[in-house]
Image (cartoon, rainbow, N blue to C red):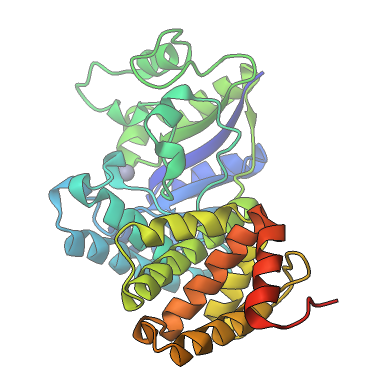
Length: 363
Ligand SMILES: [Zn+2]
């Protein structure tokens, strides 16, 4: 009826191998988010987890709320744990196929939220494939946009402590809640969730085998556990996003050098993105300083237009007319602008090019 990806936080603990054995027994693949300090304390347990085929992700070194840290402190928390995890994967003899991150308490760092996302992306952290997630709450909060791994359902079982009013029954009530305070209903036909569970010895002390109790219950309710995927399509999209970011900055720089008015870069880049094939020509020029010339309008390539532009430029020189503004950045921008215009009205430009350069139309 419903599908779920299981994530388990605050690894490692004394209890971790027992949880891992249970997961293997039930053929559930999970992502376990590790706290550096805990891994140092329970290193063998963490090694065991990796050797049993689970993914271990970064959950910071000492589990502080990122909203209370400076950007530099937050990054230091991530990096310190990265070092621990590298050592761990090496010791386990397991290749680290994917780097994933989860913020302690789901606290995304307050005013540093965007900078932390950029940092994680820049460091090659990957996003859990979440396009199947049905939760509206997840989307409404922009969680699908971020690279860190959030969740759509929290068992809350970590609140089972000595003297706490939160008990196993509270967890069952959550599982069957038809009107949850936040998030979406778990047991609903066609729903697709990311579950948050913990590996805490304190919970084990209060409720032995709690993982078996709750996870067996979900299985009995017909929940199907899915293997977490790290979507290649998503990674491609990310790469494209970064490439566009670089090209856009370069456009702004070219426009600045060519002395273009404010706003020109924006509309120029927009035009490139809307054209079929011109963005590719522009990217090729950015990367190689050469012309790809796959794109043609009325038989003309971008190089043909550049040549025409240079002729045009000479004509200006001959006339002693404002030649200074025709720098190389300006020429390049003009060539691409002309091609964008040509796409809209080829006949007009073919006529113009023949008339003003005196050359024949290409075959
Ligand atoms: Zn945690």
